[in-house]
Length: 300
Image 1 (cartoon, rainbow, N blue to C red):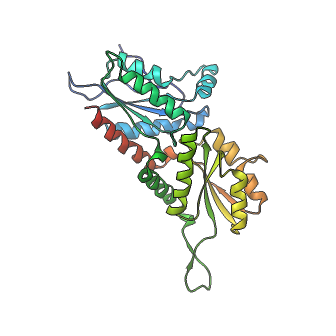
Image 2: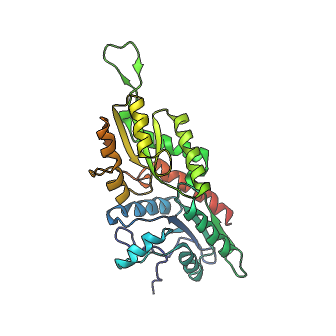
Image 3: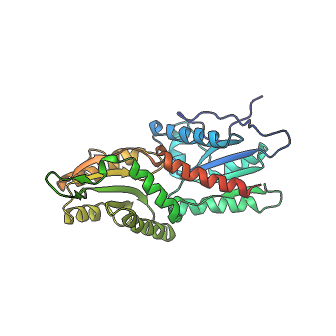
């Protein structure tokens, strides 16, 4: 009889088989992707794309998912779509016989949800009888090398932002536009500090990059002021989130008066929304999978 899936069973997410290509008697391996989650069903297909990429790269491992945001899980449950929290997902995997589990967080910073996840993994690694083959990855922005790779991957998605030759000019002039990445932000001191460091690194990678925050600084008003002071006439607006859910579509790129796009347009700036989650950028998915490779090595 088929076993119950320990991962998310939601529209756009396949019920991945728990069977792997492992030889009889060898450790059963799972990759547990931990993400804040989304209630936007049309965005959930991104999780499936990531799972397929993981299954292709690690054919002996079973991709699974858990959502770290309590409010997201409660909203989904109210819709009849319960999603497992990290503790439940880990316990289910252990009960089903998985002895190697790589927990890969898709969080940007080491804020509250990441820290809660880390506590859960630590608790399940150390009690008597715990599965020894359990390893936890890091949040993307806590690694300067990974964040640099991610920024370059995002820039390749925006060929129109490359420096343009001005008619009649003897040299190539830099396009006066800005590339605005918008994150949710964090109230956690450590998570906030990580985001501030990441914002500074954006400028070092490309002076056109701005990391704005829905919660924290620089906020929308600060980003608008900076663009106005620099005489910016055009801005590319990207959600810096795993999936482009309701926040990306409504609060960032939506037509409402309070959205980032509307505020920039009121300032006389042409806005080009790029409604694509980080999970849709292959270069960023490969960063996560590189981390998974290291985690699986730890669980040997």
